[in-house]
Length: 224
Image (cartoon, rainbow, N blue to C red; front, side, top):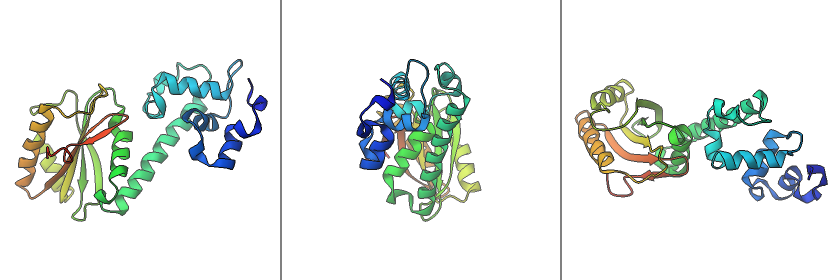
């Protein structure tokens, strides 16, 4: 079925204007971004294929440019638009975090971390450096690969905290497996970093374990 053959109130653009963006499915919102399909596959079908192939909108936005090239009908212009949407989302979240104390917007922190590291295919250890008012100074990816106490160097985290004049930090790392449950190794690493940073009067406020669909706070679990 072509989009023009759908009832007017079922077409994504008309539906959004009449009922608001929240009334649209992921595929319908994506269809508005893509604008056109290909022969034999209208834009809604193409959008649904992308959602299904990459595990939802979050998975799609974290998908590499090379993977997107494998989708017939997704040319350079459409790939660029998806990249632009992701970057706009990141910048909007960063602006919110920079304007207010970090923990006045806890969901924004979770969303930001999911966008930044949740969909990476390898493990990333990142640190959010905060000022004395708990506002974001910077997010830095400190280490990559399998994370253990021996592969994350406390002295490097301490050095950057001092360089940035941070008063506190939030630690974060992703689990490419998709399971956001903290491990015993995560707990041990948190305590090691907490002790090292305490020597220079920098507090560890939290440690998030992140996937593309979830960000679990170790502080909320009593593990920080």
